[in-house]
Length: 343
Ligand SMILES: [Zn+2]
Image (cartoon, rainbow, N blue to C red; front, side):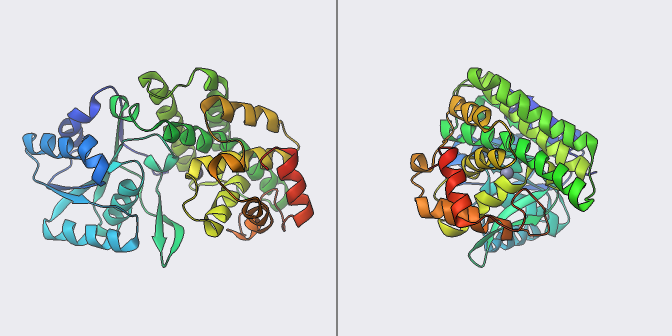
C-alpha cells in the first residue's frame, strides 16, 4: 500500500508549507507547479513561504496537463536539481507535478486549491497524450496540504463535482462486487467498505453542503482523502471507478471538455445505479442537493452523445468488468437514460 505520510487539513494551513516540508524531511530545492489563476490564489504565496523557510524554489506555470508539460517540469526540476515537487492547483498542476516527480525519482507534495476530484490524493495522473485523455500511474503524494480557506473560495461547480466523484463510489463498489462474484476478481473488504461508507456519508450530509463554507470544504476534502486511502488499500482505482467512470470517459471521447470529471461521474452513477437495480432516485436527489447536474441538458450535452456513450462505455478498460458487461443496446441505453431523467 502506498499512502501519503502527512496530511494537513485546516484553515490557513498552506501558510505552513515550509514546516510541513521540514517535517517530511524533504531536502533540496522545490519546483512549484501551478496554474495561472492558482498562482495568484496560492502558488505565489507558497513560493514565498518556502523561500522564507529556507528552501530554494522555482515556479512553473502550466495551463494544460499534457505530456509535454510533464517533460518541461522534468527538465526544470533537473536544471535546479530539485529535491521535490509541489503541485498547487485544482487538478492539472497536481497531475503534471505528480507524474514529473515520479519520472524524476523525487517526492511530491499536493496542495489542492479545489475539492473537485480524488486525484488530489491518488497515485494516478490524468493527462492528454496524443490528443487523448489517459490515466497514467504515477506516485501518491508524500504530503497533502488541504487549506480549507483556499478550497472554500473555489467556484461552486468544483465542490459539487467533487461530491459527484465521491458518490460514484457507490456504483463502483457494486461493479467490483459483481466482478468478484462473476469473474473471481481480487477483492478487498476493507477497501470496499471504506469507499462505500465515504460515499454514503456525503449522500447523508448533502443537504448541509454549501459552497463557500469552510466546513463544507473540509467534509468534501476528507471524503476525497478517504476515497484515496481506499484506492491505496486496494492497490488500484477499483473502489472509486466503475461503470460510471467508463461512461464519463466515453462522453469525454465524444464531446471533450464539455463537463467536469465529477459532473459526468455523477450523471453516470444515476444510470448505473438504475442498471444495478438500486435506488437511483436517492443518488439523483443527493446530486441535486449538492448542486451537481442530474441531466445532460444542464451541462449542454447532446442527447446522441449520452446514448452513444452508454452503448460504447464498456469498451473503455474492457478488463475492468462492470454492470455494462458486453455493452448496452441502443434501445436499452435510451430507455435507461430516459427512465432516470438524464435525458
Ligand atoms: Zn473519478
